[in-house]
Amino acid sequence: MMKQNYCLIFKLLSIISVFALVGTACMSSRKYSVESDYSYQGKFKKYKTYAFLKDTNADTSLQNQVIEEEIKFRMELLGYKMVEKNPHLLVSYKIFYDNLRFTGYSQPEIEVFVKNEEYLDEKDQKYDPIKYNLREGTLLIVFFDGKQEKAIWQGYASGIFGNAFFNSSRYLKKPVRLIFDKYKFLADGFAYDDKDKPVK
Image (cartoon, rainbow, N blue to C red; front, top):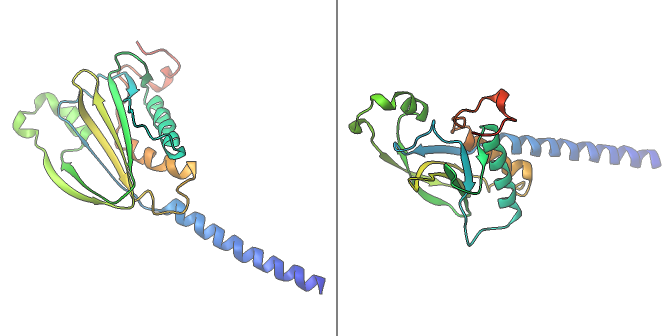
């Protein structure tokens, strides 16, 4: 009888393990909608430092703390130094908890623009609006030029709340990483082998 009970328990644990693996696979394969836009006034090759834009109504939830730490990590990987005074970039982020109607823009890839900007006329710098229906929560990250005090880049990932693992730090970091995959510019003067050197 005891042996039969052990066999039954083993079978149940095996079934639970299979469902756990399926759940993990679903979490890792979840699709986000990720887009980005930029301003033609951005000096994307000239930025070295950054700071977070101060928000008097800042959300101090665990989700926001994880997201901010991951943004810091991604900025460091790109060579940007966090400073308190006169940052080249101001970084802002926000979680929209409901579905969102959002206006993006159809533009050349940002790398193409930066490579050819000296040859472009104003007529080539068009903003063709696109309406997006962003679902199940959206993470928006915006870069402002510290001198111009204008937004020069924004990236957004939607669909981040449609998962039972939303409170997992690993899960929360993924949309940040996907958004930063859209921003491919290293800090001015930075090379990967110079990572430990101070920013000039």
